[in-house]
Length: 140
Image 1 (cartoon, rainbow, N blue to C red):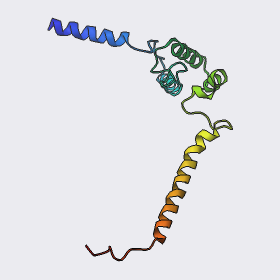
Image 2 (image 1 turned 90 degrees about the horizontal axis):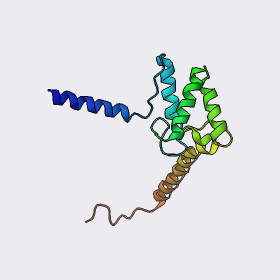
Image 3 (image 1 turned 135 degrees about the vertical axis):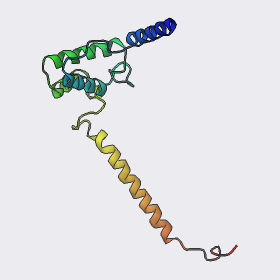
Image 4 (image 1 turned 180 degrees about the vertical axis):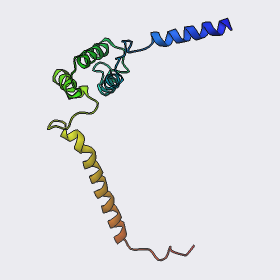
């Protein structure tokens, strides 16, 4: 029994030690939820394939602290995103805002789907005009 409790204590302390965001949570659950949402939508500029929520590099930790500070000061989500974009560019956001520079990012999937639909329609129409070979239908 004592060995099991020791094992559980070690296991629990390891998970706390490996936590990426070890700062104290906000007392207000709504503020904490906003913080969690924002840090999961901001790209780690050093890792580039992780959010700052999942990254343990020092730049991500600095950005988490900065976002925490701005939230504590009463800044809105839009003000925080504006700060990040002004400092690091649209690349810092996983979901770039719809603007002139990023319009291609938002419209490209729709344009590719439309192009694929046009190609599929042309292929189907062309195949419909081909003659049916009666010799192969019903004969073996």
